[in-house]
Image (cartoon, rainbow, N blue to C red; front, side):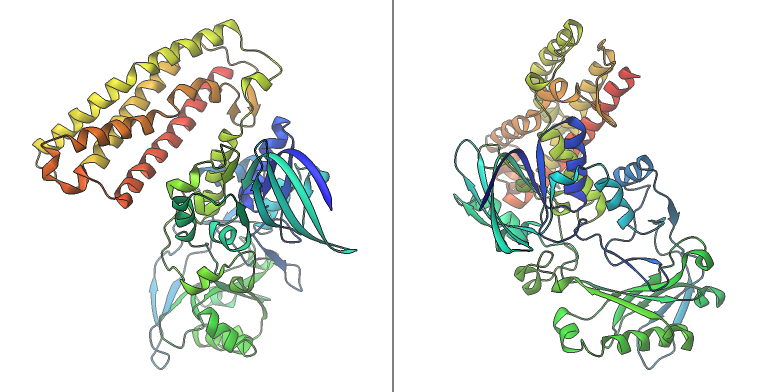
Length: 528
Protein backbone atom coordinates (compact mmCIF):
# COMPACT_ATOMS: atom_id res chain seq x y z
CA UNK A 1 0.00 0.00 0.00
CA UNK A 2 1.38 3.39 -1.07
CA UNK A 3 1.06 6.35 1.32
CA UNK A 4 1.64 9.92 0.10
CA UNK A 5 1.39 13.35 1.75
CA UNK A 6 0.23 16.34 -0.27
CA UNK A 7 -1.07 19.85 0.39
CA UNK A 8 -4.07 19.70 -1.98
CA UNK A 9 -5.71 16.65 -3.56
CA UNK A 10 -8.04 17.25 -6.52
CA UNK A 11 -10.26 14.28 -7.33
CA UNK A 12 -11.80 14.32 -10.78
CA UNK A 13 -9.98 15.34 -13.98
CA UNK A 14 -12.90 16.69 -15.94
CA UNK A 15 -12.93 20.31 -17.03
CA UNK A 16 -13.41 21.64 -13.49
CA UNK A 17 -10.55 19.59 -12.05
CA UNK A 18 -8.21 20.34 -14.95
CA UNK A 19 -8.85 24.09 -14.84
CA UNK A 20 -8.31 24.14 -11.09
CA UNK A 21 -5.13 22.05 -11.33
CA UNK A 22 -3.74 24.42 -13.96
CA UNK A 23 -4.24 27.34 -11.58
CA UNK A 24 -2.70 25.51 -8.63
CA UNK A 25 0.36 24.66 -10.71
CA UNK A 26 0.70 28.26 -11.92
CA UNK A 27 0.65 29.41 -8.29
CA UNK A 28 3.29 26.89 -7.27
CA UNK A 29 0.93 25.10 -4.88
CA UNK A 30 1.60 21.42 -4.11
CA UNK A 31 -1.18 19.22 -5.45
CA UNK A 32 -2.02 15.88 -7.00
CA UNK A 33 -4.81 15.32 -9.52
CA UNK A 34 -6.65 11.98 -9.45
CA UNK A 35 -9.01 10.49 -12.05
CA UNK A 36 -10.90 7.21 -11.87
CA UNK A 37 -10.89 6.77 -15.65
CA UNK A 38 -7.80 5.86 -17.63
CA UNK A 39 -8.10 9.17 -19.50
CA UNK A 40 -8.50 12.88 -18.77
CA UNK A 41 -11.56 14.96 -19.60
CA UNK A 42 -14.43 13.33 -17.73
CA UNK A 43 -17.55 13.86 -19.79
CA UNK A 44 -15.57 15.57 -22.55
CA UNK A 45 -15.01 12.60 -24.85
CA UNK A 46 -13.61 12.62 -28.35
CA UNK A 47 -13.12 9.92 -30.97
CA UNK A 48 -11.69 9.83 -34.46
CA UNK A 49 -13.48 8.44 -37.48
CA UNK A 50 -11.71 6.10 -39.89
CA UNK A 51 -10.88 9.16 -42.00
CA UNK A 52 -9.44 11.00 -38.99
CA UNK A 53 -12.36 13.36 -38.37
CA UNK A 54 -12.65 14.58 -34.75
CA UNK A 55 -15.97 13.64 -33.11
CA UNK A 56 -17.51 14.93 -29.87
CA UNK A 57 -19.41 12.23 -28.01
CA UNK A 58 -19.77 14.48 -24.96
CA UNK A 59 -20.13 18.28 -24.83
CA UNK A 60 -20.14 19.84 -28.29
CA UNK A 61 -21.00 23.53 -28.04
CA UNK A 62 -20.30 26.70 -26.14
CA UNK A 63 -22.13 30.03 -26.42
CA UNK A 64 -19.66 32.97 -26.34
CA UNK A 65 -22.28 35.64 -25.69
CA UNK A 66 -23.79 33.83 -22.69
CA UNK A 67 -20.74 31.92 -21.43
CA UNK A 68 -17.84 34.35 -20.98
CA UNK A 69 -15.54 32.06 -18.99
CA UNK A 70 -15.34 29.21 -21.51
CA UNK A 71 -15.06 31.74 -24.35
CA UNK A 72 -12.19 33.54 -22.59
CA UNK A 73 -10.38 30.27 -21.81
CA UNK A 74 -10.60 29.08 -25.40
CA UNK A 75 -9.26 32.42 -26.62
CA UNK A 76 -6.49 32.41 -24.02
CA UNK A 77 -5.39 28.92 -25.06
CA UNK A 78 -5.36 29.94 -28.72
CA UNK A 79 -7.84 27.26 -29.78
CA UNK A 80 -9.71 27.64 -33.06
CA UNK A 81 -13.50 27.93 -32.82
CA UNK A 82 -16.12 28.05 -35.57
CA UNK A 83 -19.90 28.68 -35.64
CA UNK A 84 -22.30 25.76 -35.50
CA UNK A 85 -23.89 25.35 -38.94
CA UNK A 86 -27.50 26.55 -38.57
CA UNK A 87 -28.68 27.71 -42.00
CA UNK A 88 -31.20 25.78 -44.09
CA UNK A 89 -34.47 24.01 -43.38
CA UNK A 90 -35.29 22.38 -40.05
CA UNK A 91 -37.16 19.07 -40.23
CA UNK A 92 -39.86 17.92 -37.79
CA UNK A 93 -41.44 14.51 -37.60
CA UNK A 94 -44.41 14.03 -35.28
CA UNK A 95 -45.75 10.81 -36.80
CA UNK A 96 -43.64 8.14 -38.52
CA UNK A 97 -46.45 7.57 -41.00
CA UNK A 98 -46.93 11.22 -41.91
CA UNK A 99 -44.93 13.54 -44.14
CA UNK A 100 -42.00 15.36 -42.54
CA UNK A 101 -42.60 19.06 -41.84
CA UNK A 102 -39.97 21.71 -42.59
CA UNK A 103 -39.30 25.32 -41.65
CA UNK A 104 -36.51 27.87 -41.88
CA UNK A 105 -35.11 28.96 -38.53
CA UNK A 106 -31.90 29.02 -36.51
CA UNK A 107 -31.79 26.50 -33.69
CA UNK A 108 -28.50 26.78 -31.85
CA UNK A 109 -28.51 30.43 -30.79
CA UNK A 110 -24.97 31.44 -31.75
CA UNK A 111 -23.30 28.24 -30.56
CA UNK A 112 -19.69 27.57 -31.50
CA UNK A 113 -17.53 24.46 -31.62
CA UNK A 114 -13.83 23.72 -31.52
CA UNK A 115 -11.81 22.66 -34.53
CA UNK A 116 -10.44 19.27 -33.62
CA UNK A 117 -13.25 18.73 -31.10
CA UNK A 118 -13.59 19.57 -27.42
CA UNK A 119 -10.77 17.14 -26.65
CA UNK A 120 -8.48 19.93 -27.85
CA UNK A 121 -9.47 21.87 -24.73
CA UNK A 122 -8.60 18.91 -22.51
CA UNK A 123 -5.23 18.42 -24.20
CA UNK A 124 -4.40 22.11 -23.95
CA UNK A 125 -5.11 22.21 -20.19
CA UNK A 126 -3.29 18.93 -19.60
CA UNK A 127 -0.24 20.40 -21.30
CA UNK A 128 0.24 22.76 -18.35
CA UNK A 129 0.40 19.93 -15.78
CA UNK A 130 3.52 17.97 -14.81
CA UNK A 131 2.97 14.29 -15.59
CA UNK A 132 4.05 13.23 -12.10
CA UNK A 133 1.22 15.23 -10.52
CA UNK A 134 -1.53 13.37 -12.39
CA UNK A 135 -2.80 9.92 -11.36
CA UNK A 136 -5.12 8.12 -13.78
CA UNK A 137 -7.11 4.95 -13.00
CA UNK A 138 -7.39 5.91 -9.33
CA UNK A 139 -10.91 5.43 -7.98
CA UNK A 140 -11.69 7.21 -4.71
CA UNK A 141 -13.43 4.88 -2.26
CA UNK A 142 -13.13 6.59 1.14
CA UNK A 143 -12.58 10.01 2.75
CA UNK A 144 -11.76 10.16 6.46
CA UNK A 145 -11.28 13.24 8.60
CA UNK A 146 -8.41 12.43 10.96
CA UNK A 147 -8.00 15.95 12.36
CA UNK A 148 -4.82 17.46 10.98
CA UNK A 149 -5.60 16.26 7.47
CA UNK A 150 -8.01 14.20 5.40
CA UNK A 151 -7.15 10.64 4.49
CA UNK A 152 -8.15 9.49 1.00
CA UNK A 153 -8.20 5.86 -0.06
CA UNK A 154 -7.96 5.06 -3.75
CA UNK A 155 -8.35 1.78 -5.56
CA UNK A 156 -6.04 1.70 -8.55
CA UNK A 157 -5.32 -0.76 -11.32
CA UNK A 158 -1.80 -1.32 -12.61
CA UNK A 159 0.27 -3.90 -14.44
CA UNK A 160 0.71 -5.86 -11.22
CA UNK A 161 -3.03 -5.85 -10.47
CA UNK A 162 -5.25 -3.87 -8.13
CA UNK A 163 -3.59 -1.78 -5.44
CA UNK A 164 -4.60 0.65 -2.71
CA UNK A 165 -3.16 4.14 -2.37
CA UNK A 166 -3.60 6.28 0.74
CA UNK A 167 -3.25 10.05 0.39
CA UNK A 168 -2.96 12.41 3.34
CA UNK A 169 -4.07 15.85 2.18
CA UNK A 170 -4.43 19.12 4.04
CA UNK A 171 -7.26 20.14 1.71
CA UNK A 172 -9.35 18.07 -0.71
CA UNK A 173 -11.46 19.04 -3.72
CA UNK A 174 -13.99 16.52 -5.01
CA UNK A 175 -14.61 17.65 -8.59
CA UNK A 176 -17.02 14.76 -9.12
CA UNK A 177 -20.82 14.78 -9.63
CA UNK A 178 -22.44 14.76 -6.16
CA UNK A 179 -24.60 11.68 -6.67
CA UNK A 180 -21.59 9.62 -7.68
CA UNK A 181 -19.82 10.63 -4.48
CA UNK A 182 -22.78 9.48 -2.40
CA UNK A 183 -22.88 6.17 -4.21
CA UNK A 184 -19.21 5.31 -4.50
CA UNK A 185 -17.37 7.03 -1.60
CA UNK A 186 -17.52 6.31 2.13
CA UNK A 187 -17.27 9.46 4.29
CA UNK A 188 -16.10 9.28 7.92
CA UNK A 189 -17.54 10.96 9.89
CA UNK A 190 -20.80 11.12 7.97
CA UNK A 191 -21.47 14.30 6.03
CA UNK A 192 -23.99 16.83 7.30
CA UNK A 193 -27.55 15.59 6.52
CA UNK A 194 -28.45 18.83 4.72
CA UNK A 195 -25.42 18.39 2.47
CA UNK A 196 -26.29 14.75 1.80
CA UNK A 197 -29.80 15.75 0.82
CA UNK A 198 -28.45 18.42 -1.56
CA UNK A 199 -26.13 15.84 -3.14
CA UNK A 200 -28.96 13.36 -3.53
CA UNK A 201 -31.21 16.01 -5.11
CA UNK A 202 -28.61 17.06 -7.71
CA UNK A 203 -28.90 15.03 -10.95
CA UNK A 204 -25.76 14.22 -12.91
CA UNK A 205 -25.65 16.05 -16.21
CA UNK A 206 -25.71 13.69 -19.24
CA UNK A 207 -25.99 10.66 -16.95
CA UNK A 208 -28.82 8.97 -18.84
CA UNK A 209 -28.03 10.38 -22.29
CA UNK A 210 -26.69 8.61 -25.35
CA UNK A 211 -25.25 10.24 -28.44
CA UNK A 212 -24.87 9.02 -32.00
CA UNK A 213 -22.62 10.44 -34.74
CA UNK A 214 -22.69 9.29 -38.36
CA UNK A 215 -19.81 10.39 -40.59
CA UNK A 216 -20.03 10.76 -44.38
CA UNK A 217 -17.83 11.67 -47.33
CA UNK A 218 -19.89 14.79 -48.03
CA UNK A 219 -22.57 16.95 -46.38
CA UNK A 220 -25.34 15.94 -48.80
CA UNK A 221 -28.06 17.47 -46.59
CA UNK A 222 -26.56 20.93 -47.06
CA UNK A 223 -26.62 20.42 -50.81
CA UNK A 224 -30.33 19.62 -50.46
CA UNK A 225 -30.93 22.87 -48.54
CA UNK A 226 -31.22 21.31 -45.08
CA UNK A 227 -29.49 22.66 -41.98
CA UNK A 228 -29.04 19.17 -40.54
CA UNK A 229 -31.31 20.11 -37.63
CA UNK A 230 -34.26 17.81 -37.05
CA UNK A 231 -36.67 17.08 -34.20
CA UNK A 232 -38.47 13.75 -33.97
CA UNK A 233 -41.37 13.64 -31.52
CA UNK A 234 -43.15 10.29 -31.69
CA UNK A 235 -43.08 7.16 -29.55
CA UNK A 236 -40.92 5.21 -32.00
CA UNK A 237 -38.21 7.88 -32.19
CA UNK A 238 -34.63 6.67 -31.87
CA UNK A 239 -32.95 10.08 -32.09
CA UNK A 240 -35.00 12.94 -30.67
CA UNK A 241 -32.76 15.83 -31.73
CA UNK A 242 -30.41 15.79 -34.73
CA UNK A 243 -27.83 18.37 -35.80
CA UNK A 244 -25.08 19.06 -38.31
CA UNK A 245 -21.90 17.65 -36.75
CA UNK A 246 -19.39 18.52 -39.47
CA UNK A 247 -15.85 18.85 -38.16
CA UNK A 248 -15.27 22.44 -39.30
CA UNK A 249 -16.60 25.34 -41.28
CA UNK A 250 -15.81 23.50 -44.54
CA UNK A 251 -17.01 19.86 -44.57
CA UNK A 252 -14.97 19.10 -47.70
CA UNK A 253 -11.80 19.76 -45.67
CA UNK A 254 -12.79 18.79 -42.12
CA UNK A 255 -15.26 15.95 -42.64
CA UNK A 256 -19.04 15.66 -42.74
CA UNK A 257 -21.28 14.21 -40.06
CA UNK A 258 -24.75 14.22 -38.55
CA UNK A 259 -25.18 13.90 -34.80
CA UNK A 260 -28.12 13.10 -32.60
CA UNK A 261 -29.28 12.62 -29.02
CA UNK A 262 -31.04 9.35 -28.34
CA UNK A 263 -34.74 9.60 -27.48
CA UNK A 264 -34.90 6.06 -26.08
CA UNK A 265 -34.60 5.39 -22.36
CA UNK A 266 -31.52 3.54 -21.04
CA UNK A 267 -33.66 0.42 -20.60
CA UNK A 268 -34.85 0.58 -24.21
CA UNK A 269 -31.30 1.12 -25.44
CA UNK A 270 -30.19 -2.01 -23.60
CA UNK A 271 -33.11 -3.97 -25.02
CA UNK A 272 -32.36 -2.91 -28.61
CA UNK A 273 -28.57 -2.76 -28.29
CA UNK A 274 -27.87 -5.18 -31.13
CA UNK A 275 -30.21 -3.39 -33.50
CA UNK A 276 -29.19 0.16 -32.58
CA UNK A 277 -27.02 0.79 -35.70
CA UNK A 278 -29.88 -0.25 -37.97
CA UNK A 279 -32.40 1.87 -36.04
CA UNK A 280 -30.20 4.98 -36.21
CA UNK A 281 -29.58 4.57 -39.92
CA UNK A 282 -33.26 3.96 -40.61
CA UNK A 283 -34.32 7.19 -38.91
CA UNK A 284 -31.66 9.27 -40.65
CA UNK A 285 -32.79 7.83 -44.00
CA UNK A 286 -36.38 8.76 -43.17
CA UNK A 287 -35.31 12.36 -42.64
CA UNK A 288 -32.51 12.96 -45.16
CA UNK A 289 -32.87 10.25 -47.80
CA UNK A 290 -30.95 7.12 -48.87
CA UNK A 291 -27.58 8.91 -48.80
CA UNK A 292 -27.82 8.93 -44.98
CA UNK A 293 -27.47 5.14 -44.91
CA UNK A 294 -23.90 5.16 -46.22
CA UNK A 295 -22.07 6.39 -43.13
CA UNK A 296 -19.83 5.28 -40.29
CA UNK A 297 -21.66 5.14 -36.95
CA UNK A 298 -20.14 6.16 -33.59
CA UNK A 299 -22.36 5.67 -30.54
CA UNK A 300 -21.74 6.35 -26.86
CA UNK A 301 -24.16 5.57 -24.02
CA UNK A 302 -23.33 7.60 -20.91
CA UNK A 303 -25.72 5.54 -18.81
CA UNK A 304 -23.25 2.65 -19.17
CA UNK A 305 -20.41 4.67 -17.63
CA UNK A 306 -19.99 3.92 -13.90
CA UNK A 307 -18.06 7.17 -13.40
CA UNK A 308 -20.87 9.25 -14.95
CA UNK A 309 -24.20 7.63 -14.15
CA UNK A 310 -25.27 6.87 -10.58
CA UNK A 311 -28.03 4.42 -9.72
CA UNK A 312 -30.18 7.34 -8.56
CA UNK A 313 -29.78 8.97 -11.97
CA UNK A 314 -31.15 5.80 -13.56
CA UNK A 315 -34.01 5.63 -11.08
CA UNK A 316 -34.93 9.33 -11.27
CA UNK A 317 -33.94 10.74 -14.68
CA UNK A 318 -34.31 14.53 -14.78
CA UNK A 319 -35.40 16.29 -17.96
CA UNK A 320 -34.78 19.82 -16.61
CA UNK A 321 -32.34 19.49 -13.69
CA UNK A 322 -31.64 22.36 -11.31
CA UNK A 323 -28.06 23.05 -10.25
CA UNK A 324 -26.13 25.26 -7.88
CA UNK A 325 -27.53 24.19 -4.51
CA UNK A 326 -25.90 26.53 -1.94
CA UNK A 327 -24.91 23.63 0.32
CA UNK A 328 -22.57 22.33 -2.40
CA UNK A 329 -20.58 25.58 -2.41
CA UNK A 330 -19.70 25.35 1.28
CA UNK A 331 -16.66 23.57 2.70
CA UNK A 332 -16.85 20.60 5.04
CA UNK A 333 -14.70 18.92 7.66
CA UNK A 334 -13.53 22.18 9.14
CA UNK A 335 -12.77 23.90 5.86
CA UNK A 336 -10.71 21.02 4.47
CA UNK A 337 -13.23 19.49 2.04
CA UNK A 338 -14.62 21.26 -1.05
CA UNK A 339 -17.05 20.19 -3.74
CA UNK A 340 -16.67 20.94 -7.44
CA UNK A 341 -17.96 19.75 -10.85
CA UNK A 342 -20.42 21.57 -13.08
CA UNK A 343 -23.39 20.44 -10.96
CA UNK A 344 -22.21 22.68 -8.09
CA UNK A 345 -22.06 25.83 -10.22
CA UNK A 346 -24.24 28.87 -9.63
CA UNK A 347 -23.95 29.80 -13.32
CA UNK A 348 -24.02 27.45 -16.29
CA UNK A 349 -24.71 24.33 -14.24
CA UNK A 350 -24.37 21.21 -16.37
CA UNK A 351 -22.44 23.04 -19.10
CA UNK A 352 -18.70 23.52 -19.47
CA UNK A 353 -19.28 27.11 -18.34
CA UNK A 354 -20.55 25.67 -15.06
CA UNK A 355 -17.43 23.56 -14.66
CA UNK A 356 -15.31 26.70 -14.98
CA UNK A 357 -17.60 28.62 -12.63
CA UNK A 358 -17.03 25.92 -10.01
CA UNK A 359 -13.30 25.96 -10.70
CA UNK A 360 -13.13 29.72 -10.14
CA UNK A 361 -14.92 29.40 -6.81
CA UNK A 362 -12.41 26.73 -5.76
CA UNK A 363 -9.46 28.79 -6.99
CA UNK A 364 -10.55 31.58 -4.69
CA UNK A 365 -11.10 29.23 -1.74
CA UNK A 366 -7.66 27.65 -2.16
CA UNK A 367 -5.75 30.86 -2.86
CA UNK A 368 -2.47 31.05 -0.89
CA UNK A 369 -2.68 33.20 2.20
CA UNK A 370 -0.52 36.28 2.42
CA UNK A 371 1.71 34.58 4.98
CA UNK A 372 2.68 32.01 2.36
CA UNK A 373 3.68 34.57 -0.24
CA UNK A 374 7.31 35.41 -0.79
CA UNK A 375 6.74 39.17 -1.05
CA UNK A 376 5.10 41.01 1.89
CA UNK A 377 2.45 43.63 1.31
CA UNK A 378 3.84 47.07 0.56
CA UNK A 379 3.06 49.79 3.10
CA UNK A 380 0.80 51.49 0.54
CA UNK A 381 -1.22 48.36 -0.21
CA UNK A 382 -1.50 47.48 3.48
CA UNK A 383 -2.82 50.97 4.11
CA UNK A 384 -5.34 50.66 1.25
CA UNK A 385 -6.55 47.28 2.50
CA UNK A 386 -6.99 48.71 5.99
CA UNK A 387 -8.96 51.67 4.63
CA UNK A 388 -11.21 49.37 2.60
CA UNK A 389 -11.75 47.06 5.60
CA UNK A 390 -12.72 50.06 7.72
CA UNK A 391 -15.15 51.22 5.04
CA UNK A 392 -16.64 47.71 4.73
CA UNK A 393 -17.08 47.45 8.49
CA UNK A 394 -19.54 50.33 8.60
CA UNK A 395 -21.55 49.18 5.58
CA UNK A 396 -23.47 46.40 7.30
CA UNK A 397 -25.79 48.89 8.96
CA UNK A 398 -26.19 50.79 5.68
CA UNK A 399 -27.00 47.59 3.77
CA UNK A 400 -29.68 46.63 6.26
CA UNK A 401 -31.11 50.14 6.07
CA UNK A 402 -31.16 49.79 2.27
CA UNK A 403 -33.07 46.51 2.68
CA UNK A 404 -35.67 48.16 4.88
CA UNK A 405 -36.03 51.06 2.45
CA UNK A 406 -36.37 48.76 -0.56
CA UNK A 407 -38.85 46.55 1.27
CA UNK A 408 -40.97 49.57 2.22
CA UNK A 409 -40.96 50.78 -1.38
CA UNK A 410 -42.18 47.40 -2.58
CA UNK A 411 -44.91 47.24 0.02
CA UNK A 412 -46.01 50.78 -0.84
CA UNK A 413 -46.25 49.85 -4.52
CA UNK A 414 -48.51 46.90 -3.64
CA UNK A 415 -45.86 44.32 -4.58
CA UNK A 416 -46.66 40.91 -3.13
CA UNK A 417 -44.31 38.34 -4.67
CA UNK A 418 -40.91 37.38 -3.19
CA UNK A 419 -40.47 40.60 -1.26
CA UNK A 420 -37.48 39.44 0.76
CA UNK A 421 -35.67 37.93 -2.20
CA UNK A 422 -35.82 41.07 -4.33
CA UNK A 423 -35.15 43.46 -1.47
CA UNK A 424 -32.10 41.53 -0.22
CA UNK A 425 -30.61 41.33 -3.70
CA UNK A 426 -31.20 45.02 -4.40
CA UNK A 427 -29.54 46.11 -1.14
CA UNK A 428 -26.65 43.71 -1.66
CA UNK A 429 -25.97 44.86 -5.20
CA UNK A 430 -26.19 48.48 -4.05
CA UNK A 431 -23.51 47.81 -1.43
CA UNK A 432 -21.28 45.88 -3.84
CA UNK A 433 -21.49 48.72 -6.38
CA UNK A 434 -20.43 51.18 -3.67
CA UNK A 435 -17.55 48.87 -2.72
CA UNK A 436 -16.33 48.78 -6.31
CA UNK A 437 -16.30 52.56 -6.40
CA UNK A 438 -14.20 52.55 -3.22
CA UNK A 439 -11.72 50.09 -4.75
CA UNK A 440 -11.42 52.18 -7.88
CA UNK A 441 -10.60 55.29 -5.83
CA UNK A 442 -8.02 53.70 -3.52
CA UNK A 443 -4.41 54.13 -4.77
CA UNK A 444 -3.33 50.45 -4.78
CA UNK A 445 0.07 49.65 -6.23
CA UNK A 446 -0.85 46.49 -8.15
CA UNK A 447 2.26 46.37 -10.33
CA UNK A 448 3.72 42.88 -10.36
CA UNK A 449 0.71 41.46 -8.52
CA UNK A 450 -0.56 39.15 -11.26
CA UNK A 451 -0.67 35.75 -9.55
CA UNK A 452 -1.87 33.88 -12.63
CA UNK A 453 -3.36 34.80 -16.01
CA UNK A 454 -6.27 37.16 -15.37
CA UNK A 455 -6.03 37.11 -11.56
CA UNK A 456 -4.44 39.52 -9.07
CA UNK A 457 -2.85 38.24 -5.87
CA UNK A 458 -4.32 41.30 -4.13
CA UNK A 459 -7.89 40.17 -4.78
CA UNK A 460 -8.29 37.67 -1.87
CA UNK A 461 -6.91 39.92 0.91
CA UNK A 462 -8.60 43.05 -0.44
CA UNK A 463 -12.05 41.46 -0.72
CA UNK A 464 -11.81 39.41 2.47
CA UNK A 465 -13.77 41.99 4.58
CA UNK A 466 -16.74 41.52 2.26
CA UNK A 467 -16.66 37.72 2.25
CA UNK A 468 -19.40 37.04 4.84
CA UNK A 469 -21.26 40.27 4.14
CA UNK A 470 -24.23 38.65 2.42
CA UNK A 471 -24.67 35.90 5.02
CA UNK A 472 -24.66 38.43 7.87
CA UNK A 473 -27.17 40.63 6.03
CA UNK A 474 -29.52 37.70 5.43
CA UNK A 475 -29.39 36.67 9.09
CA UNK A 476 -30.33 40.20 10.13
CA UNK A 477 -33.08 40.35 7.52
CA UNK A 478 -34.65 37.10 8.75
CA UNK A 479 -34.62 38.34 12.36
CA UNK A 480 -36.27 41.57 11.26
CA UNK A 481 -38.93 39.78 9.21
CA UNK A 482 -39.89 37.49 12.09
CA UNK A 483 -40.58 40.55 14.29
CA UNK A 484 -42.21 42.76 11.65
CA UNK A 485 -45.95 43.38 11.91
CA UNK A 486 -46.13 44.40 8.24
CA UNK A 487 -44.37 41.24 7.08
CA UNK A 488 -46.59 39.06 9.28
CA UNK A 489 -49.27 39.52 6.62
CA UNK A 490 -47.02 37.59 4.22
CA UNK A 491 -46.38 34.10 5.69
CA UNK A 492 -43.85 33.16 2.98
CA UNK A 493 -41.74 36.18 3.97
CA UNK A 494 -42.36 36.07 7.71
CA UNK A 495 -41.32 32.41 8.03
CA UNK A 496 -39.68 31.48 4.71
CA UNK A 497 -39.43 27.85 3.67
CA UNK A 498 -36.06 26.27 2.92
CA UNK A 499 -36.61 26.26 -0.86
CA UNK A 500 -37.24 30.03 -0.79
CA UNK A 501 -34.12 30.61 1.30
CA UNK A 502 -32.09 28.54 -1.16
CA UNK A 503 -33.32 30.76 -4.00
CA UNK A 504 -32.22 33.83 -2.04
CA UNK A 505 -28.81 32.28 -1.34
CA UNK A 506 -28.36 31.48 -5.02
CA UNK A 507 -29.05 35.11 -5.89
CA UNK A 508 -26.59 36.23 -3.22
CA UNK A 509 -23.87 33.93 -4.49
CA UNK A 510 -24.41 35.14 -8.06
CA UNK A 511 -24.08 38.75 -6.86
CA UNK A 512 -20.91 37.85 -4.91
CA UNK A 513 -19.48 36.09 -7.96
CA UNK A 514 -20.01 39.16 -10.12
CA UNK A 515 -18.58 41.40 -7.41
CA UNK A 516 -15.38 39.33 -7.12
CA UNK A 517 -14.86 39.38 -10.88
CA UNK A 518 -15.44 43.12 -11.04
CA UNK A 519 -13.15 43.78 -8.06
CA UNK A 520 -10.43 41.65 -9.60
CA UNK A 521 -10.78 43.53 -12.88
CA UNK A 522 -10.25 46.83 -11.07
CA UNK A 523 -7.07 45.53 -9.44
CA UNK A 524 -5.85 44.07 -12.74
CA UNK A 525 -6.36 47.46 -14.39
CA UNK A 526 -4.24 49.04 -11.66
CA UNK A 527 -1.52 46.48 -12.49
CA UNK A 528 -1.32 47.57 -16.13
